[in-house]
Amino acid sequence: GAVVSQHPSRVICKSGTSVKIECRSLDFQATTMFWYRQFPKQSLMLMATSNEGSKATYEQGVEKDKFLINHASLTLSTLTVTSAHPEDSSFYICSAEWKAGEKLFFGSGTQLSVL
Amino acid sequence: GENVEQHPSTLSVQEGDSAVIKCTYSDSASNYFPWYKQELGKGPQLIIDIRSNVGEKKDQRIAVTLNKTAKHFSLHITETQPEDSAVYFCAASIGAGNMLTFGGGTRLMVKP
Image (cartoon, rainbow over all chains, first blue to last red; front, side, top):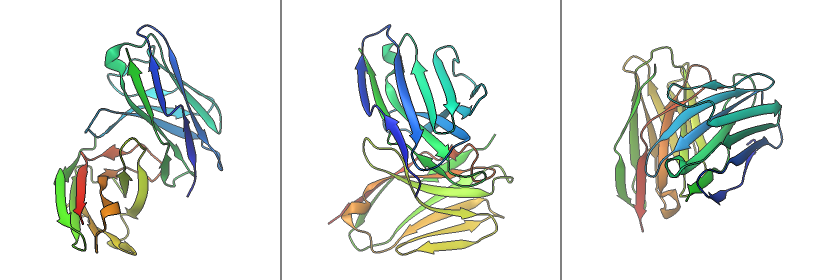
């Protein structure tokens, strides 16, 4: 299957700092990528849909100024958690559309811990 | 919007037994139903998927069935092995490449 690489896998930061998470499609071009958030023992909740070359579409309740998404190329989308606080601590996962109308593949996730 | 419910939340089986996980969805427009396996600290891994024009699909020990009329679909794992232990998520979407709505997950434990 297609490979989606996510980096870093784990990050610890101080409250008030910003953290950038990268999501790359390694062997295919992804026009659309999705960002999810997952709390312990819970399901994945969609945060935003990222389209190459345009602004991301955020789900209701997700602060777009706090979770900045950039999809500058067909193989890279980034999520920046700005001014992180302890409540932002979570597992963040990206996914990429392999081909238009085809299945999604997920990255390995990023565990963010804000102290 | 779409709502996906998944049962059971936990499932414990003996090695070699079968495991069945069931999901229901609310939006009749949904036409793509993937299943993911997630191990601790990792992202979800697609294990099998089914589209609404098919009632059943099988891949070795894994099978998925879909009942469009009742709006439910199920994952069947036969001859379970300890390495099948993980959290399994069902999902639904309108179109395969579109945003997925996930079920709540099932923690499967296979006892040796």
